[in-house]
Length: 128
Image 1: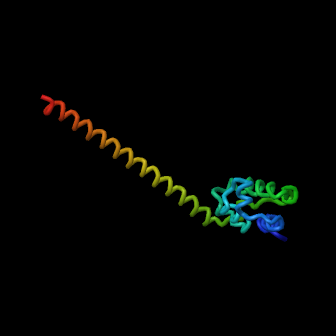
Image 2: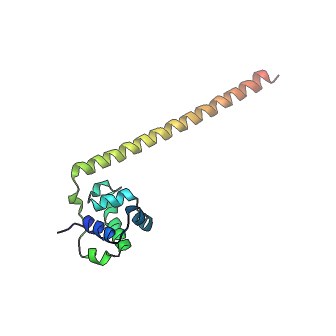
Image 3: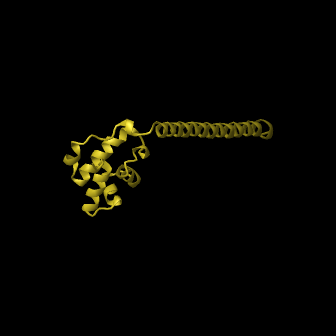
């Protein structure tokens, strides 16, 4: 039995469409469409996107009714270690983003404090 990704790829190829053309129609990034075709659902931004992306892709190709009877892949089709890595990567990126924002804010505060100190010094001791 042919998987969802292979069926979508076959329908796309039969219609003479490129991944980029389908990406324009669906507003789904080409790399995500390729991941769906290869049934590498762990490459999608989140598990919650799998079903909606497949549905949108099928609708754009006009094969939605054909795929409707087929169940989209369950979370269990994803390997647990891949999900764990994905979650760890997202958490690490979020930590780095918070750290960067903190450092930028701290630098801005230090620059403002230094400017205030220079202004106070200038007006108190040089202003005479």
